[in-house]
Image (cartoon, rainbow, N blue to C red):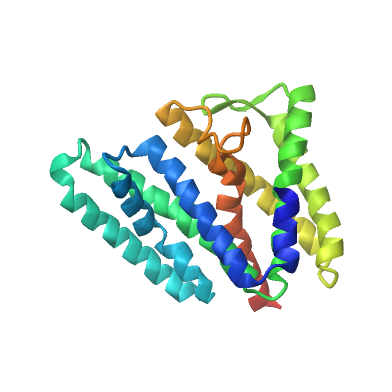
Length: 257
C-alpha cells in the first residue's frame, strides 16, 4: 500500500489522486456508519455516504472557499435527513451528532489532502507527511513494546505509552527529514523538522480520536478490509487530523515567506 501511495503521488495526475481520496473517504464513511449509525437498508447507507462526501468531492477545484461552502451544504443536508427520518430514529441528537462528526472527521479532513496536492510542491509535502505517520507508527510500536512503562491514555487506549509516543515523534521527525531531503530539495531541513514535530504530535491525537469512537461502540477495528490490519480508518486515522494541520501550516508559511 505504501509503494502504491508513493507511486500515485510521484507519477499520478492530480485528478487520479482526487479519485483515490474520494474512494478512501467513501469506504471510510461506510466503516464509520456501520460502527455508529445503523441503517435499515443499503440504500439509506448510500444516501448517508453521498451526503457526507460533498466536501471531498468539492476539493477537486482546489479552492478553500468551495470546500467551506460544500461543508455547510453537507451539514445542512444531514439536518434535512434527520428531520425527514426523525419519527423512525431512536435518538435524533445522537443521529445528528454522529453524522456531523463523520462529515468533519472523514470527508472534510481528507479533502485537505487534495488541497495540499494542488499546492506548489504539494506532492512532496504529502510524501513527507506519509513518512511522518508511517515512521511515527513504527517507532511508537517498537519503542512502546520494548521500553513502554507509563501509560499515555489508559482509559482510551491502554496499549499506548508515553515512551512509545516519544519514540514515534522522534522516528517521525527522522523519516520526515530524510524524505524532505529527497522530495523537497529546496526546503530547509530545520523547517521540515519543525513541521514534522508538529504533525507527529497531532498524529497521536488523530489516532486517539478513532480510539474514542471504537471504544464508544465496542469494536476493536473499524473494519476487516485489510486482512488482520483492520479497516481503512485504522490506517488513515493519523492523516485525518494531521492533513488539515499541514495544509494550514503551509498556507501560513506561504504568507510569511
